[in-house]
Image (cartoon, rainbow, N blue to C red; front, side, top):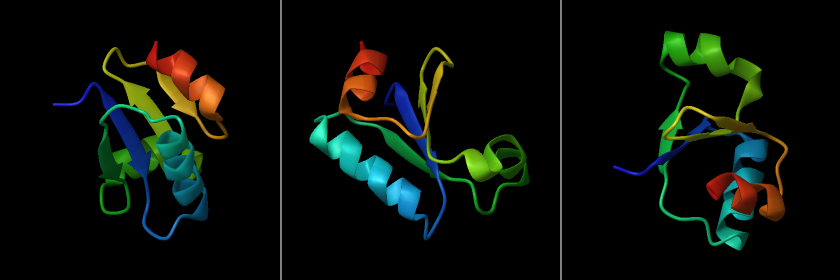
Length: 74
């Protein structure tokens, strides 16, 4: 399993932008989790998506850029 998770929702233009930043950063593999149909995730992330979470629980909230993503990845 990937040490990174991207929380996002369907039809989210900010999520699309985040995916483009991750691609530009040549970010390692990550798992996408859609919060739309999960009440717990919706309550936690709601309007905060996209959010990138590391395996240690640290989170990087949008907006982020290539440099921030690379720093976050270590």
